[in-house]
Image (cartoon, rainbow over all chains, first blue to last red):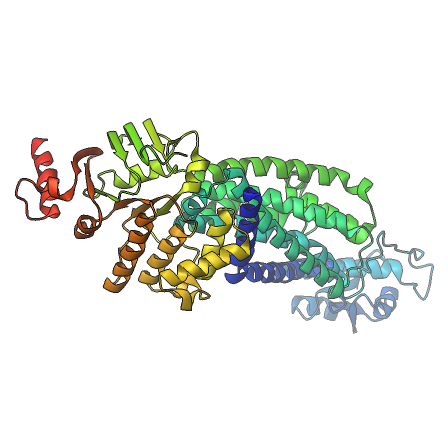
Length: 358
Length: 248
């Protein structure tokens, strides 16, 4: 009974501490800002860039097609030379010019990186999809189908993708703040020894802390999920409880990992270096939260597959987009549970050691 | 737990921090309800001795018993009986003074409401009742020190270890603190005190243990220690520790 009261006391205290220090709110806001800002900027290239200007030459059959296309902003020039010069003066991102063999030549302003690629993609898509005035000139039109019906051409498409990643991001951020910085603060202020004087087992103290922090992670995940649905237009197609369980399990694992790291580092600055560079940043950028893993080179995709946060993003995509149930997510969920069990054991040993004077 | 024997029994206690010898074969018996001061220069081993007796430091040689319980084997039971006021104000500064004490109550098995009632009672004793709901980070150094004392006494410990309890306190607060400690002693609470304010130890404790370089170099009442004509306990300690240096 006393142990349970003590554990509940620690849970209550952890909730108070994180809310009073505003770390809970800051971590939540930071996660949303990071995902929206970085994710949105990086993801713009996946958006339909209908504002990209492309030069076409009057009289070319393709010019008619491109001028009709809603995929680009085609601008007509009287001659190929003028269209060519428009590219070189950066007035347009690309130009569709006649080639010697009656074909076409696409001139790209390759100093514009992703925009040039998007222009190329827009031109080829428009040429393939738009029904030309003379059907014999171009391949027959064909249909494009979306597997999950997310509406790739809709302005909210990117927000939907980022909304699905938000839950994972907030779990990661909270675990680092609650499990890392807060424990280091307990160490430097000496409050960890105050806890160590409690007449209960070390395990009860650690479980109490873990429960308190996990409750906050669950609360954050719920808030971000509500944002994803309410503001970003995500329409969940699977069981949200599966996603919440996965988020909580991931949070527990990451808390254990952060407890373990913070128990061995001297101060907050060292924690930032030790945990930030090799753990936080790879998880943030390589887990599919902001960028799809498919764009990585194969070797980096292999690395990404070992990141636990990637398993949570998998569950998130299944639940929010693909309408799968437990049969579709049992594998990543099982991996997350194994990860959580290992990390809690590791973190528990480390914190228990921390509560003794050596 | 037995109240018949000694409150603390230590035999052949040795502690090393790497190559540094912190305690070098300490033997000590402390009676119940007798305030004892452990004095000595910085680094003498006073705090290390307290860490062993409060179960925080597990790696030592020898035997240590608190209230008849083995420090190694019965650590949880001992922690329920003792209170430690550490040198540093190790408080949760972002939350209120009251919340710090409610946590202490909960850790000692009190329900939140009972812990809150007990906390308010102790806060009144140390004169912090009006600021109970304020964040600890807004407290002065002296207020924090009083709060640490309140937390130490909240669960009504039977043996209290006070490590430099009055550092940073004004005269009124010191006086109030010693009054409260005296009341605890009257209720058969054992006090183990370390302090650099030797006059406080002399006034409050009937037994003085002087430690230097991890060894007990003197043990007795203030009067018996000043039997060679020294004018104060401070002079005794200075003589003892300088003599020891001279012998080396």
